[in-house]
Length: 208
Image (cartoon, rainbow, N blue to C red; front, side, top):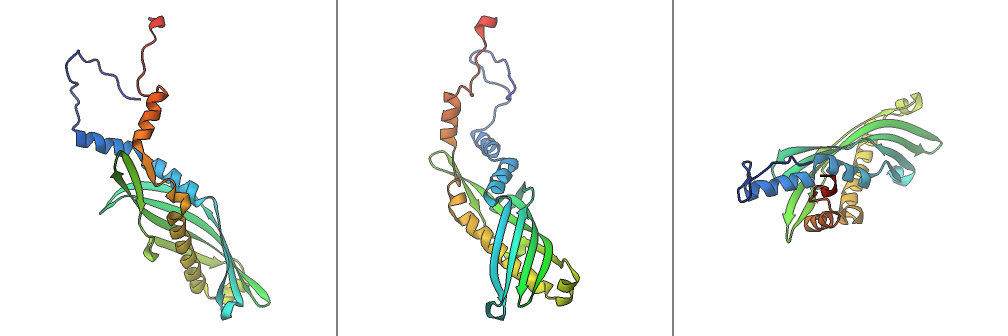
């Protein structure tokens, strides 16, 4: 809640901001890292299913992955044109079906997403995300049982899963789930706050 200062009629408060600083603070208040992290978490969802996808032998070997997203974390950054970096942790369970047997793997991944807050006319905010690249993804897999360890090929498993995670994240943020909320109409938010009586709070004269 804003702090109240008594000011004599016709005078200005001591703690005056420039219009530019005021706009910058409004921008930061409208899109805090916590709010952006919550938006990304809602878009990504708690569970991601990948596959079955062919990984070898002209499709005879197929992989299916179940991914569970953990708590999303966003921080402000000074990364050129980007304002925030968002980290999405993912727990992975993978099954690779071969003729006659199934290999099982578990692992963890982390995807980094860069986001920029772009003011736009007439009074809005556009959320721009960077394309996710291979260097933005960290992934580690390991075999769950002896059969899977003896089969080897963890490196190929990691590269296959990484490729599909990157594709999934890119398609998710290019699709309608995020496209419908990229634009934040700040003027509309202010109008609704005024209409709901949330901007100015008049003293209760009956209580005085």
